[in-house]
Image 1: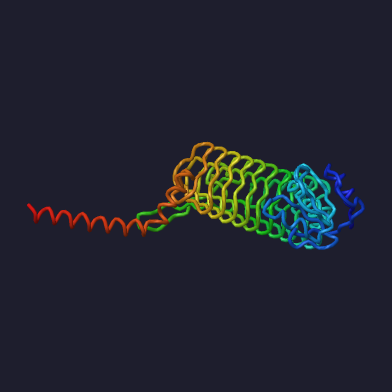
Image 2 (image 1 turned 90 degrees about the horizontal axis):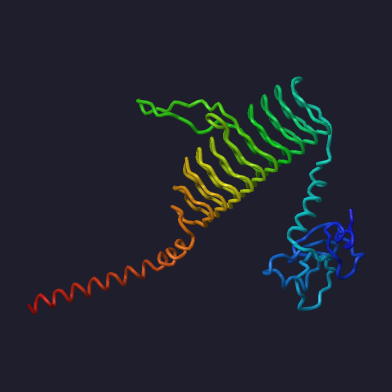
Length: 351
């Protein structure tokens, strides 16, 4: 389906600078722009591509000032990045078939399950006893919903999602392929013979509204009580959330992060990739954690930390400068030690 520059501007509350009848039917990166595609400019690093891109339409901030002539039609908006994301979301909904409804063949749905209106259930999915599914839910093929699971309105479960018994998924959530919710937490008690006895995990997982969880991320059920992901949390691919963890609302966590049991992460935090959290920690609100950090102690509100073990990022950066010069400093220290030894020997001889 094609859209004109004016239609796009109207949808985004922007205005056209150039040919309002210019049409596009696809997207492209600004450095790889092609005729008939739409792109955007948000990062100043890429602004030089604006003047020779072959894209037909470019989303750009209203405040951006041109320094040369361009061939593309501009659609000026308040925030080009947010506007582009809005268009991509609309396009994705069409591509993913999120308008699908109905129940495909070769599914199992318990006769005790409660199904909302306008749902879609893909082939080879399993819906257990007493499951409650809200309206407009999309369940793609090979999804497993265990007994007594709840899924809120407008939630999307992509292929291969597994939700164990008694867990709850809120409304307007998105769980990507391979997500596992509610597997047993890692709980084993050491015995006198040095073997380990499994501790039953009888809690559940609660995911509140507006949460997005990336592919192959796992969230373990609580030993007792609930592992909780608060509203509007965004989790990347391949994250491990252990038993009884709580992640505060509006927090974002990048790929390959591991959070050990009973750690509490606050609101509006940002966690970069490959970070590891020890167990039973309390992480404050508005905390930013740099990539590959190792968190071994509680963190207060409004901190930016990095390193392993992690500490204040400014101290980390100063320490890193020193670390890079350690070989040189060692040589200088060795030379000074030799000079001191020579001076000491000279004084002893004179004495």
